[in-house]
Amino acid sequence: MSDKTQEELAERVRQALRIVIDPELGENVVDLGLIYRVAVREGGLAHVEMTTTTPGCPAAFYLRDAVVSAAGIVEGIERVHVDLAYDPPWTPEMMSSNASAHLRFARKASGR
Image (cartoon, rainbow, N blue to C red; front, side):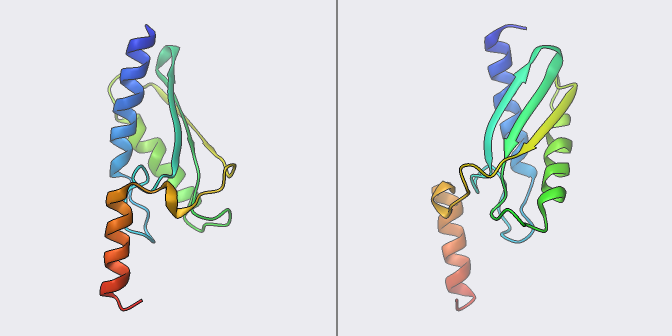
């Protein structure tokens, strides 16, 4: 598998991860900045390094399993390995501008 093919597959995996919604924040894990790295290796092994908003996040295993499922549906991906990492720690500045704006709007609408 060429480097270009691996990069294209990694980008397709990253796009597929947008279907994984954090149940507490209601945004996808990519736009929340929870996905640190996506790489695809020979044999269709997708390696995803991700985090959660806090180290003790009660949804950590749900999110990890959902990432495995979402990445696994990408054609050309045979296996998925996910590492939960907390270095660097997640901060709200890691969110996309769309997610940040949406969450600010949601907080204002709820009166917080």
